Length: 335
Image (cartoon, helix red, strand yellow):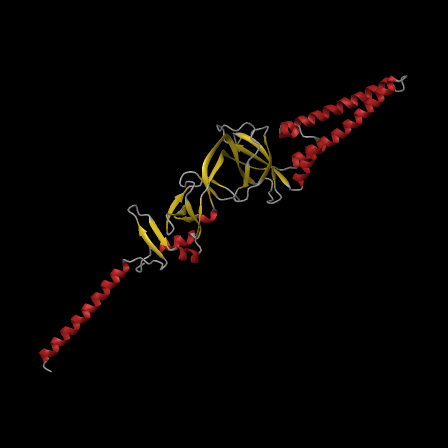
């Protein structure tokens, strides 16, 4: 083979190798532009950048996607109040003093009546005995009245109006940790419902476990550091024990009007990029993600007033799967 011919072959082979290499780089660049998507989900975008995920019904069933139509819900407008669990010892000690004083009063009253009767029947009791019995009765009666006034000043009129048996039952429940009293303060300026009788009490950090409110009373005094409208809430703690001093929050009705919205189940909400989202069902096959701002967290889910309307169908199971499919569209091989 002559040298010019050999050189020509080398040039041709080199050119072919270069062409193949360039073709591979071109294919790699083209592949880098294609997003990785699931074989069961087809993704598309609208002009606003919303990502629509299309999944056939059979595939939805296979991966566990279920939907639910949101029903209208009304909620009483409430204000947020904050406070803490009270130590029951002061009330328990005061009740013990009151019980002792009432027993002494009953004995003194009986003695005074007996002495008065004897004095009236042919002076079978002396005037001195009568005056002594009367003085003891008046003193014990004044002591009971003073303790009841202290009960009213420290705990409010509702506690002072309880019968001895009712107060004893309450104190027993407090000491046994079956019940507790929370002192909460609502912000000034909110127009409260006349004598609100209930509140939704939760321990801070455990908002998903609302405590049953057995009674709600106006507190007789205002905490100087928490200026506002104070309340004392008697709560059932058999299901969720609390300790004195524990921080709580309460939602108290502030008007007789209600607010319209929907309850979004917790399973429907996904958290992404610092916000909370749900997937709406556009039709039987397509879903799109939308942000929500819960107005309130309830035991049933999230109460939403603006972003979702009654009748909207949302994904209640499988929302995290849809988010994963959506985020896959942002991943490229070069990443």
